[in-house]
Length: 312
Image (cartoon, rainbow, N blue to C red; front, side, top):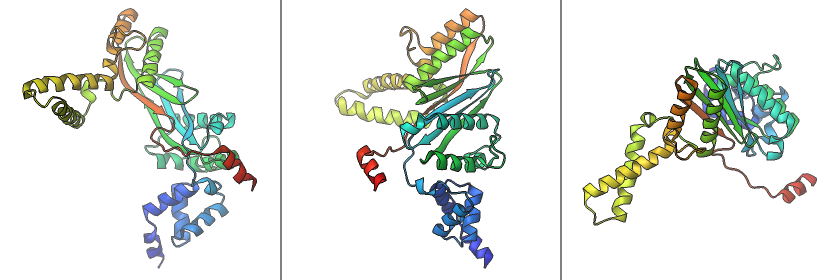
């Protein structure tokens, strides 16, 4: 019988309970096994164990928050993390921002390869808790749903520079190979990180763009060109498509974008200029750009109605 009960606990049920309570994956699995897969009893089980202090907050939308970065002193390792909250008010709270900085430092030393493993790790700030349990504790104290949404870590033989825009609304890490690493190089990379924050490139160079993406865009542009110019011969249309595609791909590729601080240069030409000035090649290898709440649906709240509900 026990084996059947365990078999009834599916990955989907574990995921649902995690989203409802904020508890760790293994804790959710155990709770469901202990309660024969009964979701309500599993929530109660976790609450009794002190692992679901956040359960009442779980149905809310956490689409505000901040992006934080941390870079080691030698510039060889860096982490970027997005932690969400329900309101901008909490996102600006000093306790929340300290917690997010702690999460970023945890990522920097973590060996986890996915979010589940990361949440199951021992919390560096309190060895009696996992990362997931520490998150639940913060939710209980702050009083809003919170979520460690995503993170990325870079370890390099080159150099990493970070940039935070708008108090944590956008964060960027940029990794470069550099024959010379000095203040001028770091300043140049910071300038390019600002460019990434502002113009949202998708790739560093043209050869990184998947062929499927190019083929898809080509078909769209071909249909557009035929609709706009039904009487033009195919060879003319082909030239139009090539021109439009090149223009579009320049916007997606960092090194092909017009450099925001000098419109006469592309970012690639700016890097060449910097390389000559410092006496060694500087080449961007990778970047990571997180924007808070990107792709998340934000729930519109009437503040007066919210206050009235709380007073009832």
